Every structure is written in C-alpha cells, then in structure tokens.
Image (cartoon, rainbow, N blue to C red; front, side, top):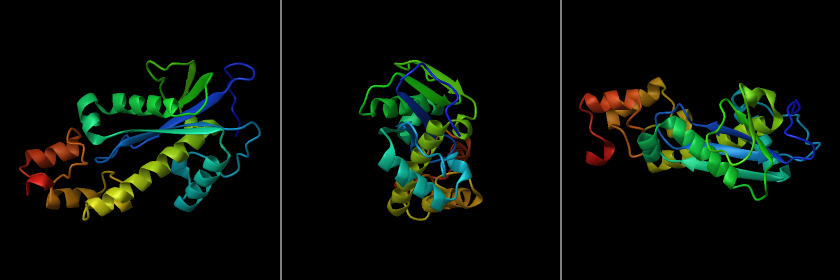
Length: 205
C-alpha cells in the first residue's frame, strides 16, 4: 500500500483520520501522522480490519518510527454543543496542530476539513487506501480505546472497556439500568430516548 496522491515533490504530508464518531459515550479522537520515506507498510491497515493485538503492534511501530504524530480530542459536552461532525473536524485540526513540524499538505479520510490551514486531499475510504491515513486511523483508535478503558474504571457497570461506548445491547441495557453518566452524549438518539423515558442521569440518582 503506497501513497498514490502527491501534493508536490519533497512535500511533508500528514495522514489524518478519526475514531469515535458513532459511539453513545466518550470523546471523539483524531490523529495526524507523518510517516518517513520508505516506511514498511506491512501490518498497517484500516484499524477496523486489524485484531486488537495487531493494532497495538502497529501502533507501537508507528509511534516509534513516524516523523511526527499528533492527537486531538473533543469531549462529549462539546459534541453536544457543536454536533459530532464539527467536533470531528475540530479534533482533526487539533491533531494537525499537535504535529511538531510544519506540514505542506494533508491526506484526510472521507470529507475535506473546513478551515484546514494547508492544502488537502480528501479520499473516500482513505483509511484502506493510503498508508498515512491507515496509520492515523490506528493511532486514533488505540488512543480512544485506552481512554474508554479509563472511563470503565471511573464509571463501572457500563462496560466501556468492552464496547468502547458503541450502541450494543449490553450498553443499552446498562443505560436503562444505571441512567446516562456524564460521559454519555445526550443528543444522540438512544441516550435521548432513555432520558425522555424518565431514566435519571447517574449523577442525579
């Protein structure tokens, strides 16, 4: 797998992707990754296609070998205020700003990022087609999974370490039993429905 698109000769290009747009709880994360020329693509793929063991191994190699890695995060309260799409773009811009070097251009999964400070190319299914975007998807996923495991210890009973906040039957059952915790996105339909049914948030019980 190689970068088939170029923003010009000798450019420094970052791949950007997100993790956590769909879950009912927790922050949305994004990562920006600049890979060195000749980076070995073996083991690097769309994070959703990798087992946890392979994803963690790929993450460790990316962190060790990348020219630069930036991570951005936007929390549940901000997601409620500005909506998940804008929150995702905000996390991506934060990840880009976190890179410790200048960037000439960006390859981003999906749609172009509004107000991006440098030239960009948006690639549908970029996490499966472009090496640097795949690397970014892995970093974003691992960082978010670790965050959700921390939330699992902070808010036991919801199963965050297992389902990572996604809308699974176990998660919905815990929501009905315990009510939403402060990390739940109350504007997302399943959480809003539980609140409308009269289930009090955890902090009010």
